[in-house]
Length: 438
Image (spheres, rainbow, N blue to C red):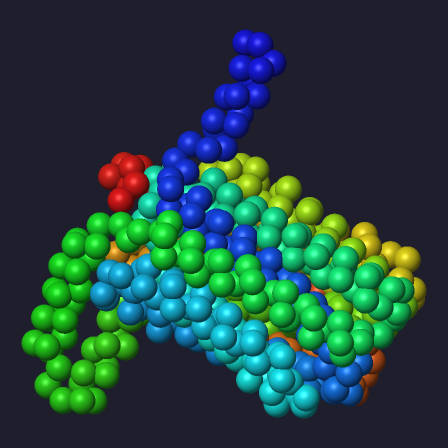
């Protein structure tokens, strides 16, 4: 086979099973991440440098915002499974994020920043589980790693563009300053709203629901069952709760448990930005390092997702969590800004492997009719852990020192990796009927 034919076959292997919905949702995520990543790593610097907020306050803001987002994924996932209209929730979610970002334009105290972060994260919480379920619905079972890998790669490409644009603006407006200027941040908020609006347009034009009629039939059957069994409000609540968690197998719950342990030490990336600045990295150089982080993330995500279709997901997730543990230990022991760029690159490898492969494993572990609920449940569990994770990190920073939250995160990641390898046994194969897209 010629070199060109070989390259074509490899590319064909990466694109096999990729549908229009996957590409459209990838484009939506690309545009949204351009918008979000212009701001996300500068928000903690805005809080610390402009509004004089402490690490504990920053941890509180990030913990509340991320917890609300994750908990909403549970509700949104369950509603999506019930009504069978994933696109509607996806569109509402992306719209909410744009509205939330607009509040940064008038933020003069940290409670307004909290409100802005809540609006942005509420939108993310509404859209994520239905979006991931829609990707799964649109993709053959033996191509899920490719689909989630491609989506992650496009999402990360948007992050790269967003951070790069922010770096250019920072360089042009304030040069090589170590502290973030207020005017620089406001300019970036205005610029970030443009791709956010374009993402909403793309959802409306390019995304479609899959087998909506079948979903409605399942939803009607579930409503009929609920009506027949709910003898009282308390009984109805019990049946709804039992229905929410039923039908999900033991390996899924063990993976949830391992993810919970990992997340307790997975504080907000705001602390990575603060630690980098504390080690002497300028705002411009921090953004350039994050550009390199996103390039690494994008390069890794898609091929590793495809690799997981061949060799399995669990070992790759364990590898990602191990890289995370070593990276956080590196941030803990660093004494200057010199090694920070290498640690951001390693962090990009962790991100690229973990997100696409982790979602594909959840899809493997959950039955088809419970997938959006499964995605929502695991992110809800993560949501419960994110608030204490960021609060613990902020308190450790204030009480013990800047290295303490990173030692804690490394220890939690190591424990979660051991639990994953010892306890979680994913299914050996998917059913034949799932090998064609819905």
